[in-house]
Each structure stands twice: as C-alpha cells, then as structure tokens.
Length: 273
Ligand SMILES: [Zn+2]
Ligand SMILES: [Zn+2]
Image (cartoon, rainbow, N blue to C red; front, side, top):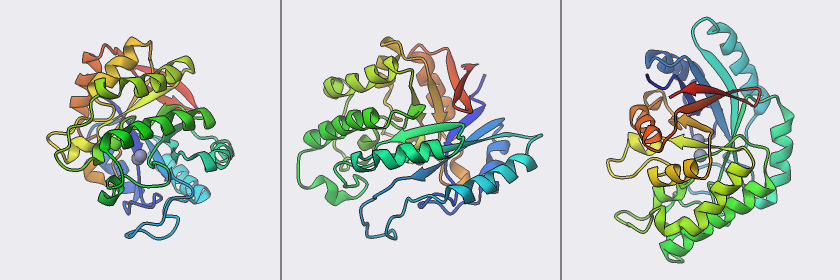
C-alpha cells in the first residue's frame, strides 16, 4: 500500500509559490497519486517582512477557485482535485478567518499557526529576544488559544511547525519536554473531532529534523483517541509533491493508525493505511 492523496499543496495562488497548478497536478500523477488537495495560504495581517511584499498571504479566492475548477474538469478522468485552504491563525483575525471559511464550499480546511505574537519564526532574529524554551511554550499556548477562536477547520497544520526553525543545532524541542503545552491541543482536537496534518515538508531538505508533528506527538494523539490524519507534503513546487510519504506512512503505522483520511465537502473519508 502507499498513500494515494497529498492533502497539503501550494501553487502560484499562494504568496510564497510561483508554481503553476498544472505542473503540481502533473507531478502528483507521475508520483502515482489519485487525489490531491490544493491548500493555498490565507494568512491575514501578516507582519512586514524583508523579502516579501506587504500582506503577502492574502488570497484571491475567486481566482484560485476558478482555475482549480477548470483544471478539475480537465483532469477529471485522471486525478481527483479538491478545493482546500490553509488558514493562518491570529487572534485579531479570527472573525475574518471564520468569514473566509464560510465564504466558499471548501472541501478541506487546514488551520495553521505560523506566527508567535505577530512575529515569524522563519527569520533568525525572531529567536533573539528570549530563550527557545519560552518561545516554544508561547507558540503552543497561542495555538491552543487560536483553535478555540477559529474552530471551523478540519485538521491542525504542522502541529510543531516552530521546531523547523529553531537556531541551527538547537536540541530544545521534544514532545516530552513540551507535553504540558501540547497535550491540551491534542485533547481539544480529539474532543472536537478534528484531525492532524501529518506534514512531510522538512523531510525534503533535512536529514535530522522530524516531520511535523514529530512521531511522539503523533503517537500521543492516537493514545488520546485521535482518529483523523491527513498526509501532506506542503509542496510549493512540483518536485516536492508527496515527498517523504513512505516515511510518514511508516511513522503513522508505528503510532498505531490503520486509516488516513481525504475530504469532500468537509466530510472525512477513510482509507486503509
Ligand atoms: Zn503552513
Ligand atoms: Zn502550507
């Protein structure tokens, strides 16, 4: 068995990708996938960044939808194409995010925490003002606050995203060390029938970093009664589609999962892992 669906992909409709949708689709077919979901970024009130234009992650949803629906029709005999979105959470935009989620009949919504108190961990100076431990604790705290403010999602994106961007060589992060902060997030997801995005993006460029969530956190989700997982490469270009999928499949099996999910019209559909 192998995973048939990549449920976290970006194209030129996202502010940090220039990839044509059609190239992403062709790549997915070459890799043997039978279903994909485009999950373009909507990350409102994003801070000003040195290498991106102002408000880089607004999303022209009608234009995204138009192109997706036309490609869905073109490829309908070859691959299933779902209409998704990755919504970046911040407390001050929770209401706008709820409106955006309702504005279209999305198949699938990922809620993601990319920022901590309006700052982006991708940039090295983010880490200067405080200890890695304090910053990570804060990241998990705001994630929990935000999923309560924005409950209209299907899976939480890359749970421990911030661990991707710690200063090089830093070994502060482990599930065990942040258990007190991570468990309430997982418990909330389980209690509300939400899932986790098992995100293989880092496997495309790092030999040492674990996928997100790390295997121990995924195992904990299962222990707590978590059922819904989706697999996503978080590819922003065609070469990364379905990257690391054999590895994340094995990690999910080792965590005790026997099923993974795809979505249609926000309804979860189980597949044998
Ligand atoms: Zn993301
Ligand atoms: Zn993404």
